[in-house]
Image (cartoon, rainbow, N blue to C red; front, side, top):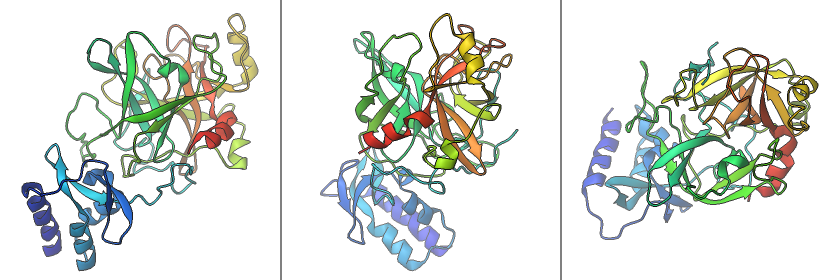
Length: 360
């Protein structure tokens, strides 16, 4: 208890003392072990956050925490020198490092509100209106490692009236400026991240019917630290998982898109969707375009669907205790939740090799 109080006192002093030399947010630093890191907020550094949350902190860890402080603050908040355990942004995490959450899944449009931390890989994509207008969200995305978010290419098509501006990770209620809470606990404050570049699939053609190759990678402007509320999903990289026949199996989609009330949702919602046979789905859309193997279909149940604003978000399948990203929300029927008409998703299994080539 005394050592926990000691850390709290250190943090209080740290927020009050003005340093002569200031580290900026995300600036390089050296931690007490001589390792290179970045100056970030405490909530973004899982190793130091773990120490901070301990009830009985060993003296060595307490000293390490104290000596990890960066000189200076950002918007009045202290910064700590954090070394990510996986600093290689070109590495796709393996099961055990991805696809897990702090919640057990309980059994959007016709869907339910998700639990805090249930899908910690979901990202919000923000856009800014032209001529100095405000920001708004319009799509979702999925964190796949500490530097990349996967989304739909059509979400990021260049437009005259608005431009892509950034990403929020770890959010639940987008109208809440503080931490989101349920009856048992509160989540960490969401993290806003900029982007370095957008990587479109080379064969994606804007405004093409069928939205073939509707996939893009967003390289973040910095590595993000993982926590209970920010962590990557697994990609279907394992041969056994990639070869799985998903037809008839239950998947989960999630987002902040339009609900059955025709309004965007303030909170992250989820919906269970059944994967539809490819040939049957192709018949549904045959008058508009020819469905490809690089796409898959799910849904068609009355009142259960993804909708406007969900684009780019994940279609997930749970295998054991691990979540895999199987689809990216692309498009669907004109009226969301139309009985008998499934939505169309980019089939991530077909793009794993492309993703591997593009991550740096």
